[in-house]
Length: 456
Image (cartoon, rainbow, N blue to C red):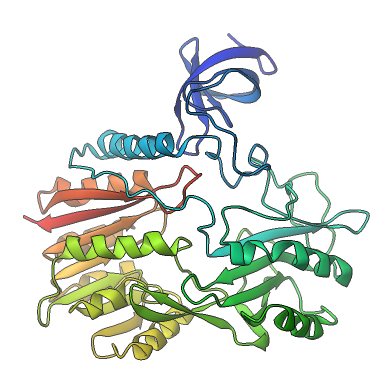
């Protein structure tokens, strides 16, 4: 029996779902963040649970043949990109295998999983960033993502996974915010000091096709003297900057943005061209961070659902701002979108009008599990894009009570996808035709997947 603090040498054979290396010692699984399959590593045990151990990587004794020099110099410390040291081909193979194994292990599903649609490029792809801020005791401003497993910021001046047009803003914005002397509201981990209310995050957004930029400061209050003048200076410095906003989040919660966003200068949204359509995207709007891969997913959706028949009806649950509803409406479907958040519904309606699709795409503010069974009446197809936790039991029951002919299920979590597919297919109501993995988040352990189901 090993003790916490003991050092071990391990052969790493796999990755866990969070991208940590997996080895075994005396029959017990050992999770080692930063280790890769094929590595032989020395680790120090940090924790022992009933079924697994957690180790801290001390050194790589013999590196995997798939290990590379990370493109980012902060990758070994920053918690944002756990798989940067892994070669792209090996990362893609692991994501493919991990999805297949999860579907089989949790759902008992052996439907064909198509080859992963890998991302190109694997850097510079993120169209949005929400960067935590803190101020040191000496008054220096730090901005960066959290170190793995902590609330300690890894200070950075650039991030290579961001679109270069927002990446280049980080350093000058940090300098301006540091000079402002505005307080920073640091909600850290246990034992850390709350430095009082103030700035919390820096938000950056770019239209990949249009180049329009939006800067949003997230703060616990609005007492930021000189913000309007600073916003004017930023807009003069960067001609593509169409707006500067202030989002108020006074609550000490894990929710990064609050309910209220105020426009400081310009406009509070960017224009974007997506799947051949025009979209407005606001500071607090959810929109897929990898625009190119989301467009590839639209093509897969159209295949899963078939051609939009004349008058064919489609329900888009969790519709957001119409990201998938509107391309499907343009393809011929009569779409009814459901979305819980009123601001997203309003934006979806504006986007429908901007593309002359008001007659083909309607949006309703609603809690999906509560209305799904009724709204499915008369529908030919259903698009699901639920949160990471997957479908609520009431939503699954509603689908089985009133099953449409086709379902396209988009998921960002293989485990919840496997569970839900097993429930939809286990009764014999549906056949799972295929699953298409799409890599929205290269250099991380996350993978998106689209499942195509047909009523039996």
